Every structure is written in C-alpha cells, then in structure tokens.
Length: 191
Image 1 (spheres, rainbow, N blue to C red):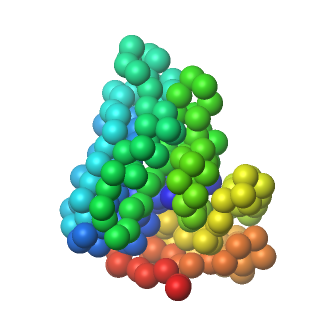
Image 2 (image 1 turned 135 degrees about the horizontal axis):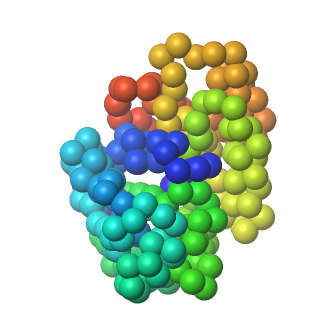
C-alpha cells in the first residue's frame, strides 16, 4: 500500500481491506501517530510495526535524527515472509519513493522484493491526477503490479475537482473504491 502523499488515508484504506486473520505491517512509524493501533481497532487484524521514530519525518531522516538504525526493504521483506496470514497488507510511510534507509530503500523496493501487488491511495482534490499518474507509472516501470487506486477520504460534499478527478483517475488505473470522509466500512478488492 502506498499513497500519493502523507495524510491521504493509507491507514484507513488498510483497515478497510484488513480483517481478522490478516496481518498489517507498518515498516516504519514516525511521529506520535500509531497507524497499527488504528488498523487493529478498526479491523481486528494482527498488526506489526518494525521501527518507531519520534519525529514525524521521512523514516530515513527520522531514524538518523533519533540515532536509531533504519529499517531496510530487505528486513521488511524477510519479516513478511515469516508471516503465515492469508492476507498481508504493508503500508508505506508517505509516498512511494519516501526513503526508509540511507541507501534509498522505499516501499516500492519492498513490493519488488516480495513480488507483491500495490494499491495507490489518493486524495480527492487538486494535485491528485499528476501525483497518482507519477506513482502508478513508477510502479509499473519497476515491474510491480498496480491493482488500482483507492480514494482515502471522499468528501461529504465533493466539489467539481473531486468529481472530475474521480472520473479522470480511471484513465490512470482502475478505481477500486473510496472511503467517505469520516466513515469507515470494510471493502473487498475485485478478484
């Protein structure tokens, strides 16, 4: 799971897709948020956070500033391979190419190592089309499957940009669904 940016709703989408028996992995959590606790509360999934850093920064920067070792894509992939769950959701920090470690490892590297498909979480407003197109293009260029796009927070009263973006996003990748602002429902992916 990746997003076009920080705060687009990756955690809520992760929780909507998760269920009891599934596993949720957050390779690096930065700042005071606890995405794993949110997913556990909303879905009942087994949750794992591999590294926590106090400042709300890119994981590589947060690790360096805290004097802690960064988590690497290889460590994440090796951990995920030990899980016995029928569904494993891995949520990156920030966007697709946000660095986990000083060597430049990203959530895209994790997906490539695991040969795991990705879902892109986008916001409804302005900037969505370009950010989403660039993200999906990078995923496909790396040879990773992009299952589609989820809208992480669909406004209760969508404006013209949100409505048009929803239509235009289908030209980039399939739109799998959207979560209405302030609501939470479990969702299923198409087969």
